[in-house]
Image (cartoon, rainbow, N blue to C red; front, side, top):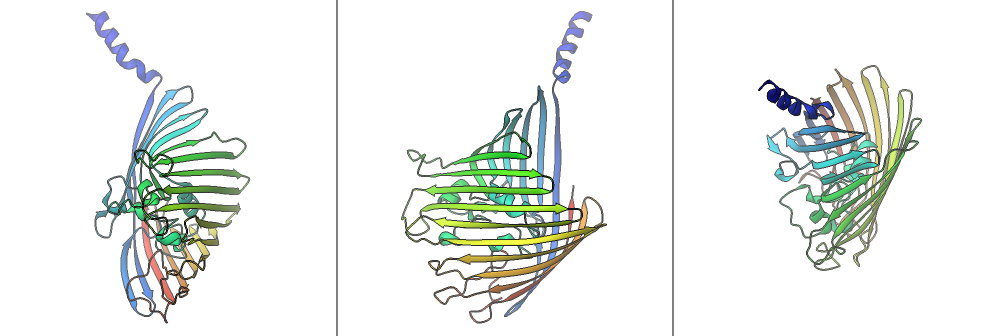
Length: 374
């Protein structure tokens, strides 16, 4: 009996000798107040001013010999209302499993595209809804949003490739392979399956990227091609776009300068191309960070429903600790009329109704918020 119990105990304990696993619960609670002044005035309390509020679970298991099994399940939170982000999806921010090996990492599920990383990691105000944010850039190709992505809302119709695949910001039904890092260089390929029977090539998303990080320099370039072969080729019911994004940052001591360029090539007859760029920098001293950024959104002449937007913002952050900080920003948005005379300007991706008019289009935005991560 002693031998049998000992053998059972040894058998149960054996996996622990070579496999260690851990699961982490994490999140961000970010709330801010906004004062908007344009043709009219507006006061808002919103969630996710500096970073999207979220609750997530991530885990890893050491399989031995440099192999690891990982997973991430992360859902967005609208802390101002208590609701879920991304249209109410349970894990709308990310949901994937991955296998890390000495030969690279393979992952599958709902994953960030490279555009998401570039417009977030290389921007002083990221792709959120305040400041001189990269979310200002978008709306090209007949409503196709290269940064935020209309399919972040679960209730949106899957009429276009961007929505069917989860949009370039987050890609549903996707597989990604990332190479190991060599001398600061790595590359990645992501494929989003359209999952349309008999149309595996006409409805899909591909995302190619390369990144170099070394000696204070971080440079990133990507190309996304997104297609949905359904409906009319002229308007929004069909998607065929290519997006080139190039970003870079350089850090020396307490200073950092960063920026990026994004260009959308609408390959449909509508030809609603567009481009945008941003450049910014920050200076860190003690618990303080001072930021500034300029953003330009420039649709081409064929995009009759969208005018140019220029935004300049300055911001300040005070870090109480590694987890909690206070932030504030002031931004001036200069919105132009579209070529057909109508006004469709953008403030953080949208303009609240009544805030602007066709002749009074500029908006000033003041933000004060607090962010806590756990």
